[in-house]
Image (cartoon, rainbow, N blue to C red):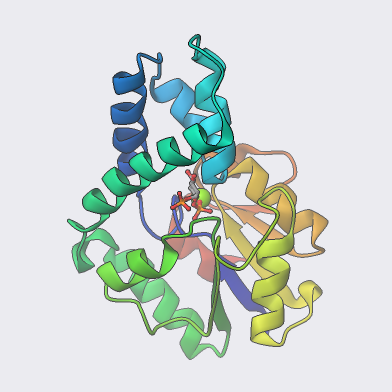
Length: 212
Ligand code: B16
Ligand code: MG
């Protein structure tokens, strides 16, 4: 039986709009230009790396690490206020029924997300106890495209990487899965990426992936 490792933002839930609003509020306050095209580059990227991308447009006095930490905290506080408005309806019935069917077929199910807010988000949508393992931004030192977050998920599940199928929406996540020796299923933007093993159009297509 294969084990599944799911990315969170962009695969199971769509918190990218909240990331955008929170970064935008910070950027506006700092007078930094930021738009949805730049926001697309933040998909699957860690909080610190996201800030560096936003600061490419910053033209003020040089920032210290303390300044950057404060900016990340400001963004995260706004982001968590927005996450607090989420509820079970923010995870679709299609996602829920597909996960249930995969579990019925005997697959183990895990999370592999860069987000340090993973557990909060899962609780908000009523999935706090659902997964067999959760590997997230709190248990890694290197973010995607490094495979660490997925290798940890496999370790938590007690599975070998070759037995794991990663489901991702970000190119960096597909790269991470492949370099960790896992099969990569791509949805959304990652469906059109050359390194994706199996592109899917909609989440329930997972039930048609070979070996599933
Ligand atoms: P946080 P994923 C990623 O989630 C988001 O796609 C990315 O935009 C965000 O910067 C990253 O989590 C870190 O999130 O600030 O909450 O720790 O796609 O890996 O589930
Ligand atoms: Mg994602």
